[in-house]
Amino acid sequence: MLLTRASEYALLSLDVIRKSDTPIGAEQLAIELSIPKSFLAKILQSLAKQGILESRKGAHGGFILAREVNEISVNDIIFAAEGKTPAVFDCTSYTSSCPNGTIGTCAISPFLMNFQTKIDSFLNGLTLGDIL
Image (cartoon, rainbow, N blue to C red; front, top):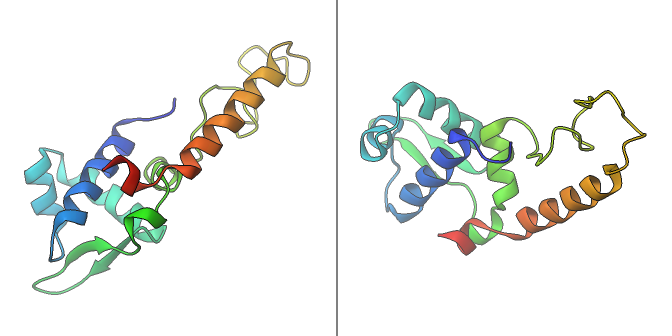
C-alpha cells in the first residue's frame, strides 16, 4: 500500500491551495474537488499538523501552504495523509510483522529492504513543485 485516496486527495488539495491567492476552506475545497468534506477536513488537519499547511481562522480563513512547494517532499505529504511512512510491501523496516511469519529469515528480505530504501529516497527527493 503506497498511495490511498487520502494521499490522492492531499495532493489534489495542495494543487488547488497553491494556485490560490487567498486561504481556501475545507468546504470550498470539498465542493471543487468532489471530495467528502469530513474526510477532506481530517486530511487538511493532518497536513497542517505536519507543517505543510497553515490554518487561518476567521471569516476569510482557510488553508494556505506553510512552505514553498519545492520544500515539501511527496514523502512528507504521504506521511501526513496516511499517518505513517509509505511502505511498498507488508514486510519492510516500517512494519513489525511478516505476512508469512518469517521475520529475519526471508530469502527476499534484503531485496525488499533495498527496494524500499530506493522508494524512500525517490519520494524524499521529489517535491510538490516537481509534480505540480
